[in-house]
Length: 224
View 1 (cartoon, one colour):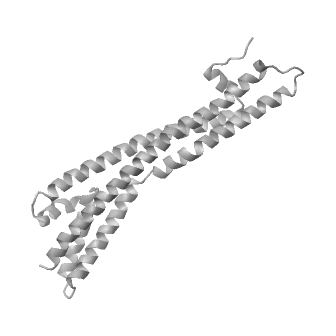
View 2 (view 1 turned 180 degrees about the vertical axis):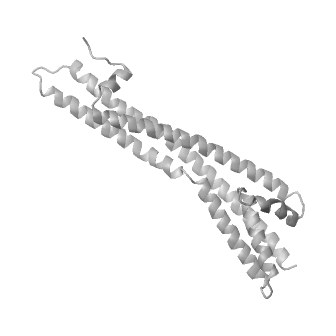
View 3 (view 1 turned 90 degrees about the vertical axis):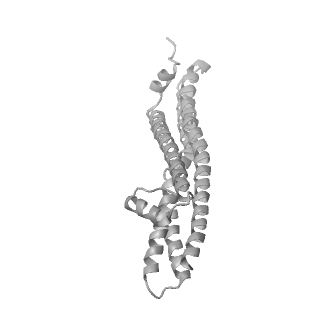
C-alpha cells in the first residue's frame, strides 16, 4: 500500500520534531492574525478620535470650556485630545503660580504634551515588534523543520539496498510543509508590520503637528 500523501496524512506521518515545528508555526500564525486585526482596529479608532477632536478644537469654541468638558475623561482620551488636556492642565497650573515668566509656563506645557505624545505613540506601537519578529524568524523556523525532515528521510535510505523516489518522496514532502507554514506565518506579518508602521508614523506626525499648533496658541495666551 502506498504512503498517504494527503496534506493531513503527511503532517500525521511527520517526525515529532517536525510536528512540533508545525504546531509552533500554526500557533504563531493564529496569534499573528489576532494581533493584525487588533492593530487595525486600534489604528482606525485613533484616526476617528483624532478627526472628532480636531473638528471640535478648530471649530472656534472656547478652549477652557473644551478642557473642562474633556478633563473628567482624561484617562480615556486618545491622540490629540489627550495631548490637549495634558498641555492645558499644566498651562493652567503654572499660570496660577506667581513669579513664573510666560516662557517657563509655555515650556512646562510643552513638556507635558511631549510626555503625552510619547505615551500615545507607545500605545500605537504595541504588538508591532511581535509582527516584525514573526516576519523575520518564521521562515527560519520552518526551514529548520524542513532540514530535520529531509535529514530523517535520507537517514532512512541508509537502511535499504535499493533507494527509490517513492521511498524518499513522503519524507521530503512532509518536511517541505514546514517551510510552507513558515512562509504562511511570515508573509502576512511582514505586510502588516510595514503597513501599520507607516500608519503609526503618519499618526505620530499628525499628533506632533497638533502639538506645535497648540503650542503657538498657548504662547499667545501666555503673553496676553
